[in-house]
Image 1 (cartoon, protein in one colour):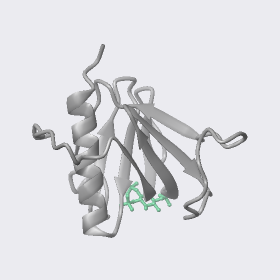
Image 2 (cartoon, helix red, strand yellow; image 1 turned 45 degrees about the vertical axis):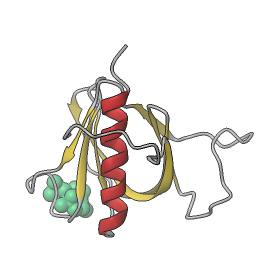
Image 3 (cartoon, helix red, strand yellow; image 1 turned 90 degrees about the horizontal axis):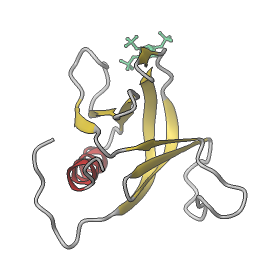
Image 4 (cartoon, helix red, strand yellow; image 1 turned 30 degrees about the vertical axis):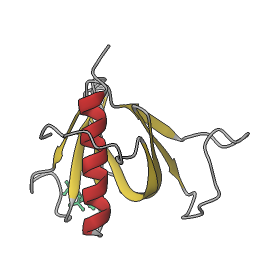
Length: 129
Ligand code: I3S
């Protein structure tokens, strides 16, 4: 991540639908399984829920709904994935301190650029405690 200047306007929370696959779990390589995934950045956590569609009224924490998967971004890294990681365009590679690696992708330039900025800012501002 390039060091990101702090802007008063930058979001600490962000959500949207992205294509996501895990590539490594606890340091072990796993098979790619791209899925369109409702993704929420909340503080230093990134939460994922599959199969929630694009509904905007749906929330985490509202009773029954729970994230299917979440990662802690503290101490992690964010970078643009190299070509050998995926043949797709606009892919972000996210590595967590716990040894999980994810690829995050959107066909839409502006969308993935916003996520890149937000994720970088998160790993830059939430140092490992
Ligand atoms: O890195 P890989 O192995 O080329 O990734 C592709 C495969 O995981 C493929 O699935 P199967 O090999 O299980 O059929 C996926 O469908 C592709 O999307 C993966 O490649 P991309 O380049 O799209 O990340």
